[in-house]
Length: 302
Image (cartoon, rainbow, N blue to C red):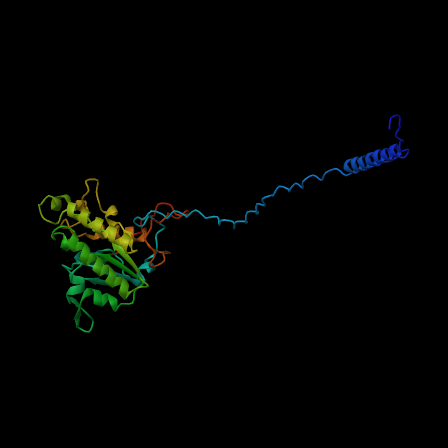
């Protein structure tokens, strides 16, 4: 059927236009929504902070006081002289030298326990002291029964012939302990052995100044170890030659009147007055007020 023309749909273009407009509107809305709501950023975790605890307060360290250095131990130093009443409570313990002191010093004070030939061993082991009741006891036992505040001990010259010094040391320390145990409240004073004369020293006998020095060293050590005072009486009775001056002795060993007076003078000016019994013996400082000790006037020989 030639020549037949198709009729156009008058509404087709309008439908197409509407669809295009709708599609465009949806796209615009989607674009607007997308732009209006930005994507959420991932939450960032806050960095963790390590909390360091405060250091505990330390207690204050106590301030340590520096220890006061002890005075070096030594013999009793010179001090103001004491009067003779100081010797009222003294027990003098010794041998024939101490007996000579009793006879010739002029001191009429104190109590004497002395036996000729006595030793540090026989003083505790032999009953050679005759008491007032006639009973014989050891010298140590006799002293134990006495009422005394100070004990002045000098023994050793009769032991100079003993071998070495160990035997002497053992017996001497035993005697010290016995005396201290019997009189714990008394002051035990050890006196150095006295020297002998140059004539006696050269005889070749065991009674010589070299042995005396060795024994005095033992006494000095024992005094320090046992808390006893040590009085170096030999200092006053030794000449420049290291020997006992001839004019102070009548036989080179025992003192005469002049020698015993010097011995007493030394005890007066090297006393233990004011020293607490039982304290470790230490060097004593001289009294600030006291100068050189004056020599006491001589009294008549008893």
